[in-house]
Amino acid sequence: MKLLEERIRREGTVIGDDVLKVDMFLNHQLDVGLIDEMGKAFYEAFQTDGVTKILTVEASGIALAALTARYFGVPVVFAKKAGHRNVGTDLYTATCHSFTHGTDSTICVSRRYLHEDDVILIIDDFLADGNACNALRKLISDAGAKLAGIGIGIEKGFQPGGAKLRAEGIKVRSLAIVESMKNGNIVFRSDDAER
Ligand code: 5GP
Image 1: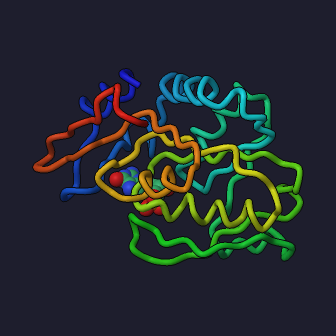
Image 2: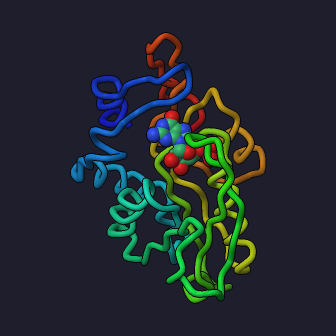
């Protein structure tokens, strides 16, 4: 998605060789117009897949998931990170390793919001090693629901998550794929390559 790539190029900052900061439009301040366009692109990619619900993880996936859900006309469920006493006890849970924090945490969703007859689209802001997506997939499979696919804002193609998920036959659509960001120089995967 050219619009997103341009924003990343213009405003993204690279930390070390593998962390991209996009706080000015996606992760802290939100450019709702841009995020709405991203939601529309996910709708175009998954509109024929029978999606009944969108699943993401708090907090950074929520805005993107919510604006995507407007196009599908379905609810968003966001997995909560452990320590939420008000979620209740009737939960689906999964362990998730955080790429940005380097720690393991438990994520959970109330059993009330994921059902056997649901067809779920996972949405997240970033895909790196695939841990967040795999934890969300566990919640879906524990609920007996079906995975429609995975929509990602920014995939870091030099990390293995996307390739592994695609190798499993999962439909993964990333709106921008960063091929490398060595020395702060951001290179995107070309448009005709797989995404
Ligand atoms: P994964 O679980 O695929 O290793 O990493 C994806 C999760 O980690 C996303 O939910 C995202 O919040 C966070 N993440 C991974 N890499 C980056 C990055 O380069 N920048 C930012 N802002 N978040 C990242």
